[in-house]
Image (tube, rainbow, N blue to C red; front, side, top):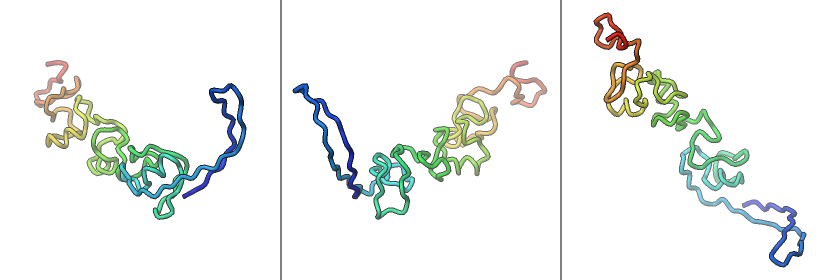
Length: 144
């Protein structure tokens, strides 16, 4: 737990201004880590360290986003395509582009569909790019 003292000025319903000092005690004893990034939800939302955890927060961050505060975290999904950045690197897709092949289907859905997220001709319900020749007949999609 950490004690944080601060000065405040408060105008309440009586119209008078009260000035004083208050000490607030915040405990981050809960070890819930919703986004799995190694910082507890309390640490992320308050910026106060829980000494029982390995990481130390550097300010506040989003407890529901593994990319915040560490965009290099293995669970980070920078483009929100349902694949982590590490999974995208392994697949060769772009971790900053949800639809690496531009066919209108996000990369994560293509993996679920067992289609190639790097081939705009291989998709379920998407659309090939105009310059693609998906049937290898020498004519692009736009020409056909």
